[in-house]
Image 1: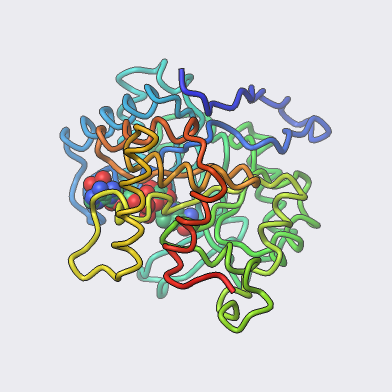
Image 2: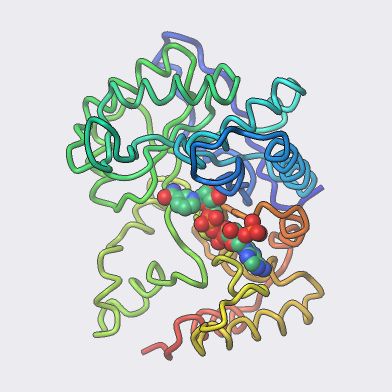
Length: 338
Ligand SMILES: NC(=O)c1ccc[n+]([C@@H]2O[C@H](COP(=O)([O-])OP(=O)(O)OC[C@H]3O[C@@H](n4cnc5c(N)ncnc54)[C@H](OP(=O)(O)O)[C@@H]3O)[C@@H](O)[C@H]2O)c1
C-alpha cells in the first residue's frame, strides 16, 4: 500500500442541513491523478473505445499506487475526459466507490454567444455541474473547483450556487484553482463553507511560488511578487495546495525538448543522479521535491502512460535531504539564491 495515502473519510452531508458542513480537510491522496490527457484530443471527434481503454489503464495504474483522488475539468478534451470516466463507471459501478472525483468549471471557450471567457455566475456553475454529472455518470462530485478567477464574479452569487448544489447532494466540497490570497479572502468571506483546496501551477519548472518568499527583498524576486502571501494564507486557513503541472511536462525525467535551457538540462542530470542514489524512478524525485515542502502539497500528475504513473509511486517515501532539496531548487531556478 502506498505510503502517501491520507486517510480521510468523506461523509455524505445530510441534505438540507447546512449546519452539518463538510470539513475543510483536503480530500484524497498526496498524489492526484490529473485526467487532462484522457479522452483523445481537444476536438469534436467522437469518443472511441481506445480512449476508454486508455483511461481504464491509467485509472488502474493510479489506484495501484495508492491514488484515490482524480482531477477533471468540464473542458478537458472538450468533455471527453469526463465521458471516459462515465463509460468506466457504467462498465464497473464499484469503481466509483474506490475514488473521489474532483472537477472544475468556469472556463468557456468561444461560442456563438461570445469569445473565450470565464464565467463564475451561479447559473453557469449549476449548469456546468449538471453537465459534468451526466458525462461522469455519477450522482455527485466530491470536490467542485472554480477553475479560474472571473473578474465579474460575485462571491454571494457563487455561494448561492454552492448552497443549491450542496443541498441537492450534487457537490460535497468546494475548492478553487489559480486564485491568489486576496481572491481567497474575498470569496471565503461570502461562503457558507471553507474552501478545501487551491490548485496552482507549482513544480521544478515553475518555482516562482518559492522565489516569492526567498527573493522578495531582491530585484530578482519582483516577477514573483504576485504570489504575495498565497502560500501562507492557504496553509493558515487549511486550504489544501494542489500542484498542477507537477511533473514539469516530463522535462526533468527524460522528456526535455531539444532546445532546453542549460538549467533544465542540469536539473535533469541532477534528478537522474538522485534517482540512482535513492534507487527510484526520476518521476518520484521530481515529485518528492514538491512533497517535501511543509505546506503538504498534493501533486497532480498528468501523464496518461501507465508506466510513468507507476514511476511516481515512490514520491511519498523518498526522503530528500535539505541539501538535495536546495540543490534541485537552485538548479531549476537557473541562478543562485541571493
Ligand atoms: N487548474 C488548472 O488550471 C490546471 C491546468 C493544467 C493542468 N491541470 C491539471 O493538472 C494535471 C497535470 O498537469 P499537466 O498535465 O499540465 O502537467 P504534468 O503532469 O507536469 O505533465 C504531464 C505531461 O507531460 C508529459 N510527460 C511526462 N513525462 C514525460 C516524459 N518523460 N517524456 C515526455 N513527456 C512526458 C505527459 O505526456 P504522457 O501522457 O505521454 O506521459 C503529459 O503530457 C492535468 O492533468 C490536470 O488535471 C490543472
